[in-house]
Image (cartoon, rainbow, N blue to C red; front, side, top):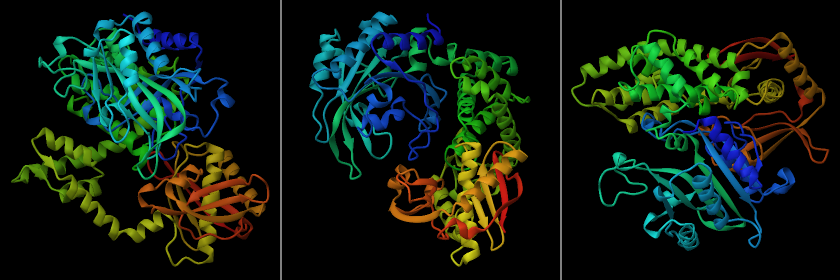
Length: 605
């Protein structure tokens, strides 16, 4: 038996002893703007893994290890079983850009993995199974790993071969470093099995064999055309699912029975007066989603209807709905959030620092969702009661979404519980029609101005770029544009932020905008692929509306080398040529525009 804090430390101590440098977890909001959330330990190291940066310059070693916060939602419907989570931690070790003659690659990674699992934390070697890449799409079978595993005492009958879907990892976005991988699976015993003679790792019928550690041998780069070419260097990128290894080491069915979740589960039992064993799925979903929400808010994500804000809103509202299913009458989510903060604050102090913000955000979202849920549920029940079929039509699902803010996923879940399927394709068709009808309005919302804009509108639109950048400079990178509206006399700018701005903050923002106006900065336009724009550092928060080739507007001093850029955004315009054309910027009002969204109204004088 080993508790989670001891296990984290054992991992870090082991790899530090083996010459690795401990690197702190990066934020759940990744540096790479092409992905919404950090979903793997390797994401903060992508520039080094791809050879764009030299790891020695920043870390002084090619050998790194970390415990990384991660968040994934593709399997959100699976949360509630033994192995799936939205938020999770990844233990990882890396060997980046090694000299093939000196550094460790496949042999070194496999030896370290076996030593740590068997000799350091006591896993039974006779219950370890391994998978390797069988060779596909012009990339050969991993003969080397097959040989090394056998040399490390894993017999050939416990080594299974799979293709791209199971044993080729990456990239994390459309392009980037990737490679064949070798996974370590652990046999949890016959009681978890299907009893079939071909049962083994990746068995589709049961969960007897649980994947614990993925060793990625990063040798390739996927290009924009989908082809794979050799990287100029080779890397080892590994990841252990922390929740899974914790449950296996403690001989539990899942991590929900370990100290990672037990305080929350036990608190939920007291709140509901119901045993966890009676309602495992509901308890697990609530515990997982509250934990995920705490960490998202802790890293500066706030509920909204787009991107990562939508993910936060979805997990919070899903947790709330399962609270209704359990007939919880009290405001239970903040109570559970407090337990999570207490359990993790020593490991991740940022959630303790943002405790007040986390609890306030959860409370505000609860109030908002209660109205949505009550009205939407009544209407959905009417639809189900009248139906002479077992499908919720696309028009009906979209009506619930448009009128009551009822998420499609919620309609699906409630319908499925009552034996109804949901016409998702029909929903998206209705959504598309709605977008086409309101396209002019959408242009005003996201671009701020219509196509017939004049010089005054162009000045105010340019001012929104300066305002956006000033807000991020003063309040932090959690600020994201949520919409704007411009007339010939004023601008209105919505942005994500959890609280009212102080008088001092408003003054600082206004002064910074006016400073940049006085500096007479140039506004430059470039056209490039959307992906290139994001990689260049351009802000873009409405990805669904951008074409493949976008316009990027940069505001800055281009007479120095390198240029000093104050603002860089993907935008359709219109803009003026220099900031001095704007005159004087004045904020006339700052107010709420919804949960986690603030609104500034401003004029140019």
